[in-house]
Length: 237
Length: 115
Image (spheres, rainbow over the protein chains, first blue to last red):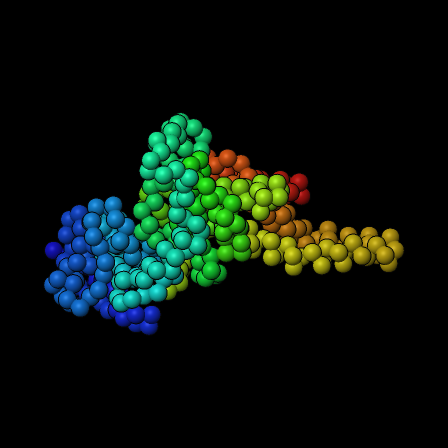
């Protein structure tokens, strides 16, 4: 049986990589490797996971330099020979070892007015949104985000401008912008129009390249740029 | 922690780098361009003398690089405008390939014209 040489980040913001030797198995995922280390080699290793099947988005880490869901990443696909480097998500504070603090990430969703704001109450009938309407289709293309933080961690602009709302929050704002029931559009466009909003995007497309759900936050951000421009020309912003 | 080259190694990031580097290089070249035009202020003979100097093979070769930079910056800029102003399609990578093709074609056309 061959062996994997795995370097794992230990500590907080300041720390170092610690090397472990892990038996290599068929169909082994990176999450399997991390779990093996914690259960068999060092129980003090901190990491986060829940569903193990790509639904919850909690196991995202930096694997050989790229942000990924560890549960859906086979070792065979990413190992550099017998080497794996596993670190917490970039651009987020490190709580301990492989656990990143996601607070800033979700605070930015709130800052981008990522909460639905409707006019109806529970006493009203359902809103009817035709599934084949143009705006509903735009929502469909972007709605599957599960908030794993892979795009945020892959985006260079986030590290260049720490206030930048980031691809996930802007993608969320884009889905709500296209929700015909939402009544908070003006405040939302104002929230995403600033220096740290959609216009800060440099179109590197790292978010689109790395999104495990194959979404394109770049497309949503481009849409927001057009929406903000249109609103500004109409004098609505 | 910050991203290293492994996170950045994908076509759209290379396109960003080419656009940024070509833009900076053209900015550096611009004062030289204005200086060359400014030679006309010293009279026709002075400008013609300078233009004859630029006919040297090495200078012409450098000019090819300049044409390539201009073409790359323009094609990259058109690509960005299309991404941001046209309805989104899943052909961003084809667009990138087209921008690269246009740039290389412009550079080669200039080079062929020289030979």
